[in-house]
Length: 131
Image (cartoon, rainbow, N blue to C red):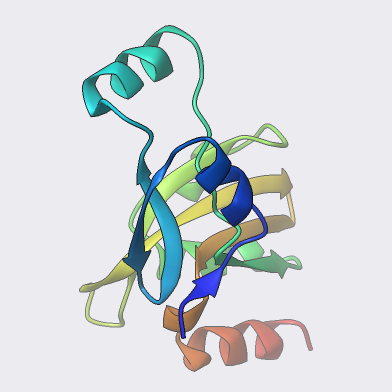
């Protein structure tokens, strides 16, 4: 069974070409990909991330935890609402998947990533850091 985001009907009504993406019915394009590219570069674009999981990482060790979890420098995030695209790493430094880190406050960030791929170890580590 293919899962659908809350924006599925909107994507379809706007003429999106839909494809299976990790079990989700997601838009691939709305016509000419070249025209879409130029429109986003000139104006703005939107990416439906409602198929992804939001995980808040909070507490005094939140930044240190993220430094061990992602490849990019989360210390560059200092303004609420700003985001950083990065890779989630395994303990050996190999790439597990990509994700987005949003800065909420000095002691709180939000991860936005495919919900099926969040390692249970990562959630357990965060719980231990909260004690």
